Image 1 (cartoon, rainbow, N blue to C red):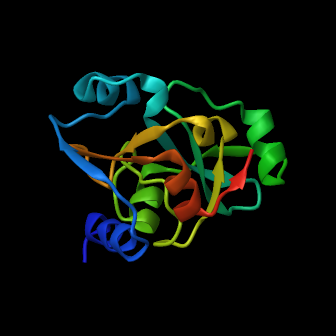
Image 2 (tube, rainbow, N blue to C red):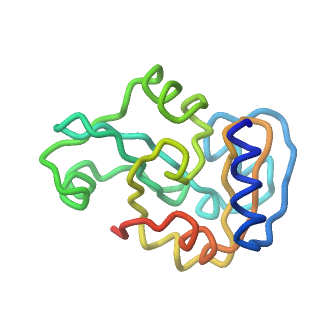
Length: 150
């Protein structure tokens, strides 16, 4: 089963309404926002980080935000975080960097989410592929991810 098929299964199992949008392949949140005709802040940026202790985690942010490295490390409970290497992400998550979905159920990885995402009505994320985006209520995303809020 593909990563996208797993996501669809979780959405259906939890009775979550969602929409699928197909578009040209996108590799950044600004490009995703443009392809969807939405504000970049409504897109989800899922970053796989490596802690000082060599634990992989996912940091989920609004697409228009940059990582505050010190705040991220503090919120995660470590002294330092860096980006995980692309090959590590591919091996652990099952997709390329740039289309990591905001779920930790598959790896499993701890999810840390910026509270700004929970205040949105809807959010858009890539389901492990660059040419599709899923739209769902931000509250439903929070419910599915069971994140630690930062």
